[in-house]
Each structure stands twice: as C-alpha cells, then as structure tokens.
Length: 279
Image 1 (cartoon, rainbow, N blue to C red):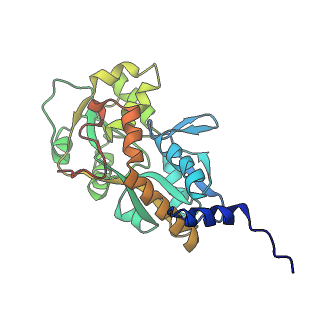
Image 2: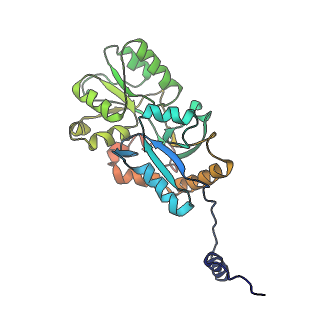
C-alpha cells in the first residue's frame, strides 16, 4: 500500500513539534468580512475608492496573521450606524461603547477615549459641563450625524435641537469648516477626529493651532474599539474575530498607530492606551 505524502503544512507542524517550537493555530474566518466605514480623521481615511487609516490598517494586518479578509465600503457616518443596526454590516469601527450599540453587537475595546468640547474661542469663560454649555445660549454647536458618546451626549443633542442651536454635519471636516467660518461656535468629539480631518485639508489646516480643548464632566473616559455584529456573523466567525482583535488590542497596535499619526498635544486628554488607568 502506498501511503499519501504529507502536506507541506503537516511537515512544518511536525518539524516545529520535533524542535520544541510552540505551535499556534488560529481559526480563520469562513468568508470575507464586510466593513462599511466613514471618514474619521486619521482613524479612517477615505479618498475616492481608497480606504486607509489606523483601523483599516489594523484589519488588513489581520488578513495575514489571522486568516480573516475584509472588504471596505465608504459611507456617511449616519448611514454606517443604520447599516450596523439593521444587520447589513459585520463590523462597526471605530465606535465608542454605548448601551444602544450593545444591543446589536459584541464590543472589543482597542483604546481609551474621551470626547472633548472643541472651539476656536480663546477669550470666553471656561465651560466644564454640559449644563454650562447649555447655559451659554448664544453658542451654536455643530455635531457629526451618527456620532454617539452615550446617554448624556444624546440628551444634549436633543436639547440643543429644541433650542435651535444644533447643526448636524456629515463628517468632521464639515464641522471644521463651520467652526472656521464662525457659523458654529463649538463641537464635541475626540480631538483626534477633528485634528485628523483638518490636517489633510488646506482650507482649514490653519485652525489646528487655534483649537481650544475642554473636558466636560458628564463625558468621562470610556472605551473605543469595534463592534461585532450579533446578526450577520456566524458563531465561529465572531469568535475568530474577537480572538484576533483581542490579541491586537493587547499588542498595543492601535495606540502605536495613533502615536504615528498625531502629535502628543493632540492625544493628551483624549486618547490613551488600554494598559493605562484613565482618571
């Protein structure tokens, strides 16, 4: 009887075992993972059909390491949220953790983040809370449609809308233009998102050194990362992705990506690595 020749993979495993080397096996995804994305500073960059940035780079890195492949489609941020909630997207990335999103997916933290009040007004009195912002009734606030930083943020959005002080825009670049023109007085988002948007556009790049950044008591440090769909992903694919992303989180890959793209002054107060202890 002629026995079949062992495969190259089998020979490699046998050799590794004989030499005492550790053998690590990760489950690959069963299909290409669909990832709609929206322009989000340096985190996600969209240039026509080309998608790049910190998070797409992270996922592409998993293709070789983990055997999971991803396809990216650029959509407006508000559309991204709808696709995920309606079961037409496998991942929501990047995303801050919120109770609403927890109903639709499983969260994997990749970084600590904190939304900040950002303006170009150096001389006005300091604002340290959402109530103080509401009390400044002459200030118009521009926010990105589809951003969500939790219940307090959503309540602020509703109240500002009722007061006629809310401007909803499709992305951070549009917000930056309103701030520069004076049509809006302030915004709320992670500083890196706005800074990343203005760095890449010469029309608003000059505002980068003029940003006034203030923390708001009701918007504390939280986690930002990726949601895995409870609807579209099989149990096996979801487990494979969660394991792969958790390994990436432990490696500090996302924090290193932010350090490559942003100056320390922009990261301070808004982005921290997972192994830190936010106050």
